[in-house]
Every structure is written in C-alpha cells, then in structure tokens.
Image (cartoon, rainbow, N blue to C red; front, side):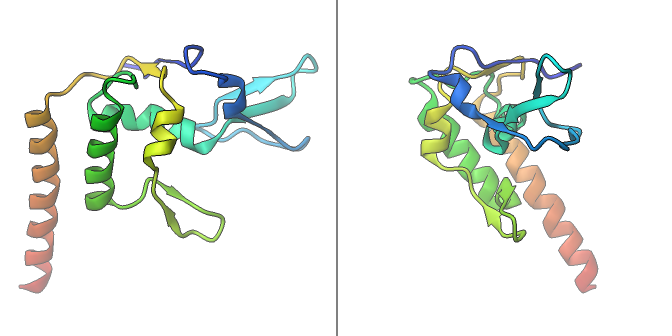
Length: 139
C-alpha cells in the first residue's frame, strides 16, 4: 500500500518547500514541484519528508495540537533506540525536535494508528533483536 499524505492543512505550508538548483535531479523520496517548463522548481524540506515517513513508525496518521506531545515522545524514543532521523552535510546525526513536529501540525497520512502498547512492543522487539545480534557476536 502506498503512503499518501496531505500537507495543505499545515499553517503556511508553502514555507516547507525549498528551491532546487537548475540542474537538480530528483531523488527517490523527494516531493518535487515542477514549473511550467517541466523542470524541478522546489521540493519539500527533509524534515517534512522524514515526518511523513515517520508517521508509520510512531503510529500516528496526523499531527494535531492534541497529539503533538505524544508524537514527540514516540519519536524521541525511536531516535533513542535507532538514532537520529536526519543527517547534516557532514554526515552527523540530527534529531527532529518538538518544534519541528509542532511546525507540522496539520500534516496527515494514511499510516495505521497504533496504541501506546503496540508501539512499545515494537520498540521492545527492536531492542531484543539488537541484543541477540550483540550476544551472537560476543559468543
């Protein structure tokens, strides 16, 4: 099933786009807007694209004023276990922040909604798999 998303309910959503150079070649996960000359004109910034895909991971299909704190808690736990969601130009990990998520209130996707218990079970499974691999390497 494809991941669908809607960004037009985000306040000032046009600010989430960044211009691209004239010789720009879209990458696999870019969301690109093309100009009248059929050349890439702008794309979503990396934080927006990452939050779209992270909706699957955190088990929420929209960011609202009501659930933004839970979104952040789940994302923080995920980043604690799996590492930062983004990297900077030097390759150093960059964590998404509460302000990043709050800026995207109104974003929605068709991701499945997960209860807190299901989300925690998923995290536990990841940690258990990692521990098993570490144990196998040590043996």
